[in-house]
Amino acid sequence: MEPKKPLPWDLARGLDRGGSVHTFHRMKSVLQPVPPEVLLAGQQRIFGMVARAEPVQQTLSEIAKFAEACFPGVRASILIWSEREEVLRRGGYGQLPESFADAVDGLTPGPAQGSCGTCAFRRKRVITRDVELDPLWADHLGLCAEHGIRAAWSSPLLSPRDQSLLGVFGMYYPFVGEPSQSDIDFVDGFAHLATLALQRHREDENARLQALHDSLTQLGNRRMLESVASEWLGAAAATAGTGCVVFVDLDKFETYNVGFGFPAGDRILREIAGVLGGSLRPGEHAVRVGGDEFVLLLNSDLAEACARVDALRQQLRRGVELDRSLLTVRFSAGLADARLDPRMDRLLYLGNEANRRAKALGGDQTFVIQDRIVAELRRRGDVVRFLGEAVATDRITPALQPIVNLATGEVAAFELLFRVGDERLADVPVYECIQIAEEHGEIHGIGMSMFRAAGHLQSRWGDVLAGRKLNINVSVRQLDRPDFLDLVAELVAEGGLDPSRTCLELTESTMLELGSHQGEALASLKALGFAMSLDDFGTGYASLTSLRSEIFDVVKVDRSFVRDVATSSVDRTLCEVMHSMCRARGIQILAEGVETEEQAAALRALGYDFAQGYHFARPMPAEQALSWLEEYSVVH
Image (cartoon, rainbow, N blue to C red; front, side, top):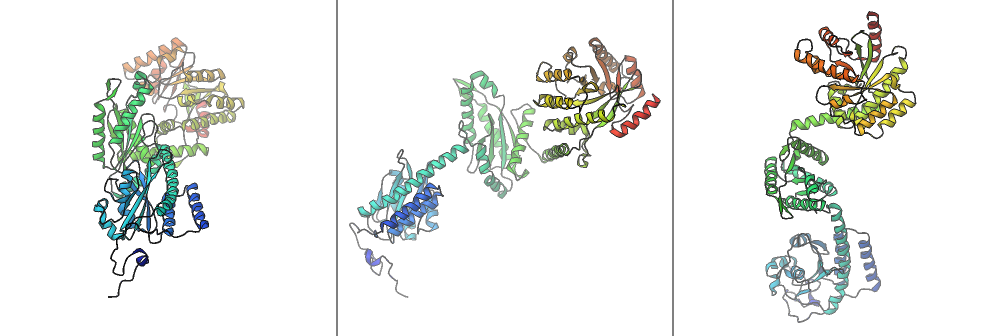
């Protein structure tokens, strides 16, 4: 076998060709003279990296390499102290290989954890003259043998602000000995550079953590949710179905704020956040997304996630202590399996929708989104998108249905009914389109399209429509918009719509509070000259108190009462009572959904003013309605 060649440091460091070790009391300095201009250039380069906030591992590696260049044969490492984990983490290295970095990453400080781990434990410099004889290294001799380490020393890197630990600077020798004082003094200069880099890193990290955490609960915030979404989704996909998004919303939390005050409410939120955060496993996240709304990203399949949520519910039911009172906290939870959609924003939407359904069922329970619900929601999303496109491209076109004077048989008005010229919506019922438009904010654009269409018809059909009104449906959600009145008034002022020939029908199936902003809006429209009609009367949505106001000119009785008016004494009596109430207030009454002559005759006998329905005509496109009116007028 070829004789082993001496290492570069053999002769200078007291190693003979056979590799045996001579004993040193104090080793001579191994520091090589460094020209001042080289030292200054190196320092400036590192200062620049710190100032530019380059990745801290890169900066620390540059410092380690700089130190090694000044101490030939010596290897350096700089480990980062993780306050949150209370371990030393991978930092910067020069010649030390990845296997060394991997081995010491996550090192827990202790009284016998080599030079670096012990240095971090003591917060003082630790010097090991011979690792084979020092008990500090008893558990790490295999690492030393693998990387040729015979002596080592480490210096703590302490924050200049509060002397807290930032990291550890380590030097490793392939021979037995101790550093000279000049070596220590020189390396302290490198340690100062590393301290500056780590201080900047900690400040940046703290700022990042503050930006990613909720200040009240210390849980993550929406920005953190965005930052961890990709990694969490990737892990969930890799484990085939072990990921669930849980949307948690406290039930009736406002009662705590009202009953105990906002500071007490904040304390409750902190307690709850502690429970949620304490339930997490590695790789999971808890985020506060709103006032009393939280999102959990769990690494569990659906069944286990439900069980964990139930365990949280039982834990909170035991109560949260507040001012010597034990308050029971209940919440609604919505679960969405990560396999339902690869995008976090959609999963959050699904979780929120599941939570909304849990609350609609009474709260204090968990609702799991199923595939059929996802399909339904996607379909509704498509409808919203198609409606928005139709409004933007002016494809909202009304159909007209006549309203007939029962006494004379003449056409008194036409109701403009929403239709959209989009084949993608051909199979979606009109009532569903309207409902979805109201829920998702598209009803205003549709409504204004109908206003403009009415004005256009009034302009084109001036003579034909003489004495006849056009009825336009108005949603309560339109009345809530601050710009609605201005837009209508502007349309009237420009001559685009004649209020005296227009009746507005309130179609929203909710209670109308006439003393509210909605009532004020109606009064303003009335002042502009519009007639008013109250739709769906008798269904329980319209308030009887509405009849006491001076707002409504016409009341439309719902078709459910009209269907059996000719055959049912009960329905006939109900229709008669509604007629009497309207007559007492001087309000005209209209029956909708009239499909037979028998129904029309019964209503005529009761004294109803108007009727509308298939018995007279179905909704028609504008041009067809004009032709129909000409033919109808000849007969009647």
